[in-house]
Image 1 (cartoon, helix red, strand yellow):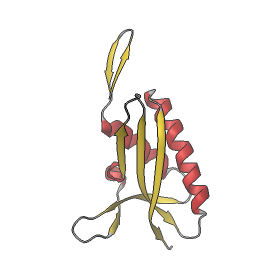
Image 2 (cartoon, rainbow, N blue to C red):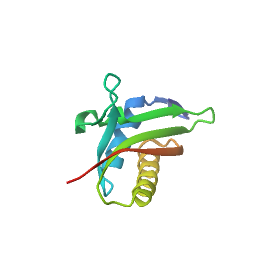
Image 3 (tube, rainbow, N blue to C red):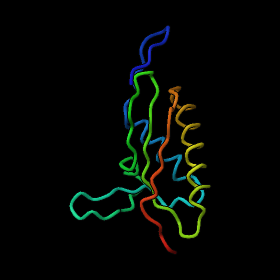
Length: 116
C-alpha cells in the first residue's frame, strides 16, 4: 500500500500488516495462536510465533482502507463472541496506530479449539 504525504510517499508491505495483526490477535486473552489449514491434508495447524502472519489475509480496498481476515485457535472454554470482539477491537486499534491506515473490517475465523 502506498501512502502519499506532503513530504513524499510511504510504501507499506503486506507483511507489516500481517505481523502487526498476528501480534495483536495473539496478545488477546483466550487466543492460543494463529492457524493455517494445510492444503495437502486439510488439517488446521497452529503456527509458531515467527510464522503467525500466515494466518492473516490482507485485502486492499479502493477507498484506501484495508480489510483483514484472521484464522485463530482458541483455548477451550472461552467465550468465542467475547474473544472475537476483543480481537477485532485490538487489531483495528494497533494496525491504525502503527501504520496510519484505516482498517475497514476485521473478520475472525475460529478454526480450532485446544483443550489443555
